[in-house]
Amino acid sequence: MVSCSLIIFYIITLLINPILCYDTEGRIGHNSVIIHNRLLVFGGWKENETIDTYYSEMFYLDLTNPFDIKNKSWYLIEEGNLPVYTYLSAAIVSTLDDDIIYLIGGYRRNITTNKNDYSNLVYMYNYSTTRWTPLKVDNVTPRQEIMGVINNEGTIYIFGGSNAADYNVTAGTLYNDMQIFNVSTMFWSKLNIIYNFPSPRCAYTANILKNGIIVYLGGIEFDKGTFTNISEFISGYNYPSMKTIRLFDTLKSEWAQMNVTGGDDISPRAYHSSVLTTDGYIIILGGIIVLGGIEKYTTVSPKLAILDTNKDIYEWTIPASSNSSPILYGHTANLYGNYMICVFGYDMDNSDLNSQIYLFDISNYTWVTTYTPPPPITTEPTETNVTNVTTKSLRIGLGVAGGVVLIILVSIGVIVFKRYRTKPHTPILEISGTK
Image (cartoon, rainbow, N blue to C red; front, side, top):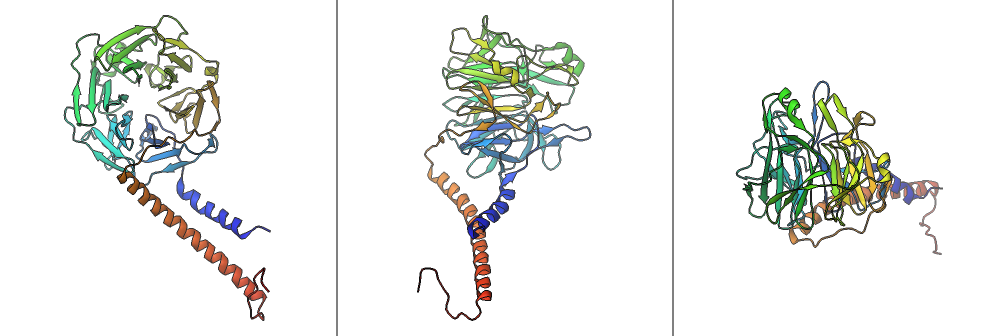
């Protein structure tokens, strides 16, 4: 016979799971960051034949719990919707306050009108309060298809990018300047650099090493910078070699170029992903090479590669597991513990948007299907954070506890009623263990 407590557990599970778990849709050009032991995803868009779909919701994967890629749970942050639709933007977690995320640039559309909206170019998200705040920052210009990195002093570096009102426009500009944003002073500026500029570039990846060097890989270059129509752009753009690596020294504010001579050959690419391991290896995945239009493209080779930045001259290697890698572009990858976690993007193997998670174990360079969490990464909470988290936890706890109490009371009532009906002439309640 099934116990009453087990029945109650099943009822609670059935009631709670539909509320908490979130059914996600495939997308490209979204943002994902690791914050408070969660993989937080927001933004992106889905291209349709009739009308494109844009996303404003925020949802996360709890990285403190184990899961497998076929059985995972996304959770919606109900009060954290984006203030605008955005895609191909930069999202950076502050190094000075791990509760804060900065959202910079990208293509922007008004949520109400669905029209282009560049009225605010920098937003700040507070994780504990789930609130977005537009920041009044001077000197910012719209930039799309960018990636930002932040140093330990709280300075965000954003190189180049494109500037066009919409992804499908036929005119625009690519940049090769270095913009910086000091999150402490909220001051935005452009560095005054006159030597060794790279060509204007977008759709690259950027990783900042422990020595303050930013490594830029891949992307699309357009030497002329500005184009007036798509034909002009197609005839002039190119994909930089993965063996000609652009480096920016944040300590000296200087550009340099490294020509990689040894190691494996890596084909050019854009809209790929990269992560930096704690021991100085950059892992890139996927990407695409477009040949005059999105209908004409070629896949990249290899699918996955590793750049060793510990050597005086960096070196590319291709692990054996690269052959089993997915071919994605417009996806994101984040490193947590021993796992590179890749989500969404376009799946070129299946010619469709990807809605599943891929896990790459960096400890042995293999693709895996199950995730085992590392020891939680914790920080000392501030009084404000404790209050916010406690309030949210209390609200959720009271709601769940109230439902549990109600179910228990109903169950007890049913049991007592049944016993009363089956023993109508017993004047004393019999309790096991008593005389």
